[in-house]
Amino acid sequence: MTAMTAFSVRGAPIESADELEARLRAIGAARYHNLHPFHRMLHGGELNKGQVQAWALNRYYYQSTIPIKDAVVLSRFRERAIRLEWRHRIEDHDGDAAHEGGIARWLKLTEGLGLDTAYVESTEGILPATRFAVEAYVHFVRERTPLEAIASSLTELFAPRLHEERIAGMLSHYDFINPEIMTYFTRRLEQAPRDALFALDYVKRHATTPAERAAVCNALIFKTNVLWAQLDALHHAYVHGHIPPGAFVPDDAR
Image (cartoon, rainbow, N blue to C red; front, side, top):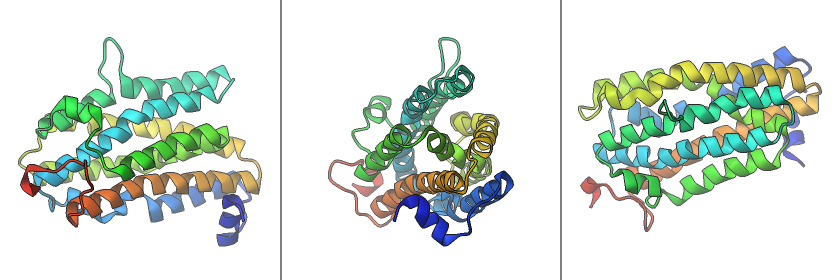
């Protein structure tokens, strides 16, 4: 049984674009990683500084891979208009000669948390599961259909609320967090909705059969699993204390 038919077994065939959007939003409501216990702890002030460092360090690998992923998506399309639209996502993260991008803003966060930038950029201390999950995402957008590649980005529909929770929660609960190192999240409050609306419109217009709509839903489920798996690994390593060999060990856990 394929992933596409497996989804159809769990729910009625999706017969329209509006039904597709409703199903996608239901998937986000049930599966987005804002629900993960590690995020609840992070936003609620229940983590110590070393655990927050571990989160930021591991998340850097995901953030720094996003423009690589987006370059792969861009390469899947011959339509110039789509490439032009998608290209700004790479610029948002990489920046340019005149403007810093999201990766630079994330490094401000890790530096503000006391992590050495060269160590962060080396990715030497990230968890194995972080690397496997992120690389699986790049593999997915390279190997699946262009429609599924775009659909996998639809977690951005749910990101602004998460960023709002993160900004408010971390600023109020941690004395080692200040607004200057949280600029990645404030900037994404503007960028993510724009990107999400384009991707949502694209899949609603181009997924024209129940099978294609099921594939779109499965792509979003896959992406939520990518995000969830990274938090599972962080929780196992830095909350339960099972840090694998070679991974970052916070000072307060040495």
